[in-house]
Amino acid sequence: MIRRTALAALVALAAAPLALIQPAAAKPPSQFTEEDKGKLKQVETYLNGIQTLKSAFQQVNPDGSLVRGTFQLKRPGKMRIDYDPPNKNFIVADGHFVYFWDAEAKEQSNAPIGSTMADFILRPDLHLSGDVTVTSMEDSAGVLEVTLVQTKDPGLGRLTLMFQEQPFGLRKWRVLDAQGATTEVALLDPQTGVSLADDQFYFRDPSRRKERD
Picture 1 (cartoon, rainbow, N blue to C red):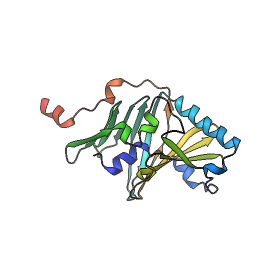
Picture 2: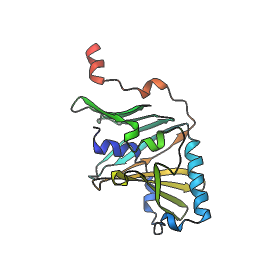
Picture 3: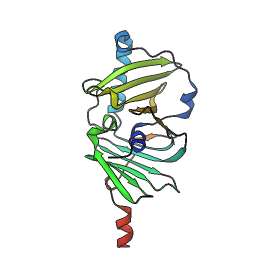
Picture 4: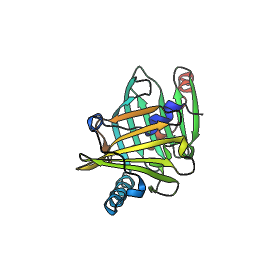
């Protein structure tokens, strides 16, 4: 099974400036107004409109350690996370599985995309309903924050998305996992609609490549 911290990194995307904002108390679904529902529809439309995305990122791990790297997304189903040196770990989603390469151990682990929280952003048709449940929503100081869980098993973890409202755009994802650990990653300069080569979204064992060389 993919390591817990690696899975969290797949879905924890954050912008540091937003961390300074103290939003209002979260509003539960029972209190959602028609305006709130309209904003959730805006979130769906925005996310479904992203076909490709590339960004430098800054990740804060549960133990407080900090790493940087590059995040690439090609919907549906494909994603890649490369960490900056000296960290040689990487994560790849090829449309079916998510692979984590542990450079220190020189081994990979994997899991079906559908069994990870990353499935939410990788699926071809994204909806904030059905197998995904919105548990709360906050809207304060120009930032919209939406918290989600898997409907069938909410205890697996909680995904929080934060959006800048003017202009509207994703600026933060935060994951609280089943063990109570939180991981965040800052998108430093996200670019959408960029050209991304398909061949980088397949797992290739670095140790085997060295053996061939």
